[in-house]
Image (cartoon, rainbow, N blue to C red; front, side):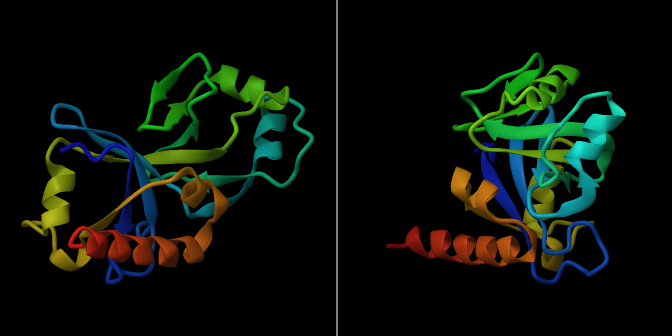
Length: 184
């Protein structure tokens, strides 16, 4: 079963001080041959999109958009998670209703006011080798059960309407609710 389009929610016992402490990750790729890739959706960084645009020579009139920490892999890469009615030069499907883009054209489009309905920009991503995520979820050696992941179905509203630790608490509750609903 593919986990593409699912939320990974960090177990409450994941140690503080790690990037995955109270993290909510949206998985936009999960297959046995290539592994799994996603972005942390609930950890805003101190970096503003306006500043990144200025470094690229682009004028961006809004100062309220922050770049989120996407994960520890390729932290300088910008990954746009967005609704799938919009696309850029390098856009790929990322689940049922979402896509991911990562190219210079997307930055130009955003600077020109050409936006997806919902979107969030991330610096970096999370990645797992084939089979690694499944082993982590089961707590198989060398992974520990208390550092495993919880799962939940993602919705646009959940991903884009909240952020921060509040979003982790909501995801934790969502996971429990969805797991309980399976039995009724």
